[in-house]
Every structure is written in C-alpha cells, then in structure tokens.
Amino acid sequence: MMARREQRDLPRMPATGALYRRALLGALPGLGGRRRPELPEVELTVSGVTVDRTHLADYDRVCGFRLTDRLPATYLHVLGFPLALRLMTSAEFPIPLTGVVHVANRITVHRPIEAGEPLDFRTYAENLRPHERGRQLDVVLIGSVGGEKVWRGVSTYLGKERKAGGGPGRDRRDRPSTPAGSAQWRVTPRVGTDYARVSGDHNPIHTSRLGARLFGFPRPIAHGMWSKARCLAALTDRLPEAYTVEVTFKLPVPLPSTVAFTATTTGPAWDFALHDARSGKPQLVGTVGC
Image (spheres, rainbow, N blue to C red):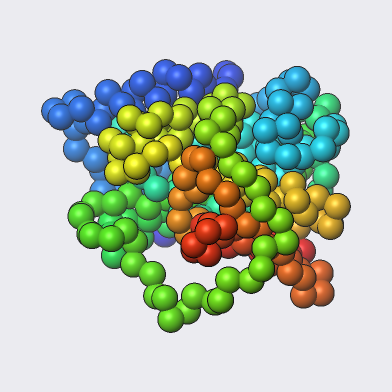
C-alpha cells in the first residue's frame, strides 16, 4: 500500500529562475549527488493563485487563442508549472531535470474556468516505471476553485539513463500515412523565446542554438506544450465545456520550420496531429474527448 504523502504548503508560487539554476548546478559533476530510487512521498500545494490578465493575453497571443477571460486548458499548466518544477528540482526527485524528456501530456477540464477565479494547486509524482531507455513517471498537477476540482494535468516524463543510437524506438509498421494538412503554420525562432517568457520554461534547448546543441539538437526546438496549445487553439470553437485532451510528443519541432496541422472528427471526439510539412514525419498526435 502506498504511504500517505506528506503535504507541504508553500506561501506562494516559486520563482522558476532559481529552480532552473538549482537544476543546472546539480547537473555539474560531483554536485548532483545520488538520486533516490523511489518517488518522493510528498505533495506540494499553493493556495489563492490569481490570474494576471495581461499575462493571460500575452499567452493567448503566443499560442493563437482568442483574447477572452475564459482560461485555455493549457494555460493552467503554465500557471501551476512553477509548483511542479519545484517538485522536479528537489533532491528527493528520482530523475534529474536536465535529463528528462516530456513525452506525453493529458489535461482534463471539468468545467470552464474564468480569469477572476482564484485557484489552489497541488502537485505530486506517481507511477515510476521502467522504460527501454530509462525510467518514466507522471507528474500530476491539480487545480481547484473553492474546494472544487476544476482541472487536472498529467505530464509524463522520460529520464534517459543509457545511450541508445537513433533516438527512441518507434514501430514504423504502425505509422499511418500522413493525411493532407488542413493548415500549415510557420514556426519561427521567436516561438521558443516568446513561449519561454510567458510559460517560465527557460530550458535552453528552446531558446539557444548553443543550448540545443549541448543536448544533441542541431538547432532550438519548440516547447511541446506550445505545440499542444497551438493545436487546441485551432479547435477552440469545437470544444465542449468539459473535456480531456491528450497528446503524445513524437518528434521535436525545429525552429524555424513549417508544420502541417490535421484534425478529424468521429462523433464528439477529435483526433489531431502535427507533421513536418516537408518530410511528413509526425511530431505530435492527440485526441479530444468528453
């Protein structure tokens, strides 16, 4: 039976800059220490988080949403991200932040959330499991209003622990033919820096050519959650008031590049994807359902 998690209440959202500096310092030889083999039995909480409407409008513009007081599903991921980052940069976390790859994300919106509603967030990690390239785990982030759970996000991260050539294995026999894109988007280098500014995710693989090369990318890549948000923005008028949107990040979106967006519907559900417009290789696949 899982032990009860220790609840740690924070007085405010942490500053992401200090957390990234801690993560980079811990990656230096001799300073990182040994990682624990199990998940931390802790739950971090912050209460009374309010929305800055100027920040919300900036986020909407960067990701392609219309400017309204209703919060996009992906915006709450950004709002609560510093809390999750605090958990992931703690000495108790089993995978160093500098080695993680965001491979999937699932968000459930239980009801529409307006910008004027103060939010309480809590986060914890669960489901540590083996993977052919290391270990995976889920970081859960939950948003509540007045004790009512209104939003839940689950980010799946892979911690690579041994070298393997050619990237993560993929079964090409299961790859469907690439459908004709319903839209094409030019993704410029500003997407990396602008999204870093509004999200607080300043990982250098998204903002710096040198930083990207240090982690094996020839040039910067777009944030996975920007890609998810941009797809969701394209479906805004077709979404119900309560839904779950789930994506798997297949391949990085290089900056700059052109991507093809596709979306098909089956009843109330939507399947959508991003592909490289030139090669047709899948970069993101997702579904929206009630």
